[in-house]
Image (cartoon, rainbow, N blue to C red; front, side, top):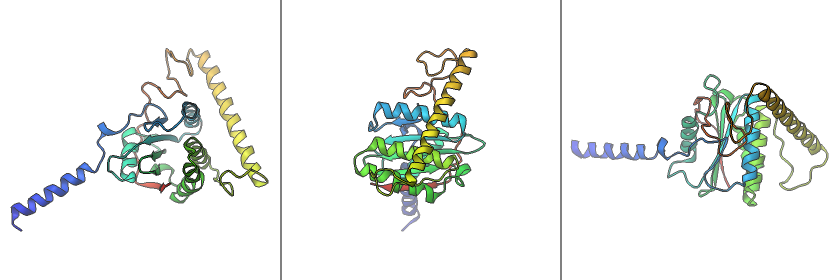
Length: 246
């Protein structure tokens, strides 16, 4: 092969490599903690998770985001997820504590992308257990809302220092040791509600408007159409996490 031929081959490989990466223009906009581009989640689930994830971010620190899409445009889910996580800036810039949960409905794939700052709290093994035990059985049963809720709950538990313990079988009743987990989640829910009330009271005293459609200062949390929502400038994602199929 002559010099011109070799150059053409290298140029072709370079073009193929560049085209396999998602451009920022092709990525969904980060408008809320839950971005349901595939349209597979109910409005109630999106609203509930938006509020829960914003309170968790304010009270605990790590930022967790959720994205559903029909397709990655030919990119692997690993490459696509890390592109989205970096473009969105999920997590705090200094702590790199972002976590992104991605569902690709067309390919029936999902991934948990973990920021480098929380890889010790949420290991690849733990992310894989959440996918395999909390989410995949529900997705296989057609319960997308339940799968995402269960995945988010498990992620918040791990990031809070707990350990996710799945039920013995998906859909089984909770008895014995499972009651301990139920009590824990009830307490967490109560704490979230109390924190939201405190934020609302403090906000009114300072002239903020919390969870209102017309805020004069401060942004509205708990809505899937939050204007100007963004990450914390993070981007320290080095490929930690886990992927799965259903």
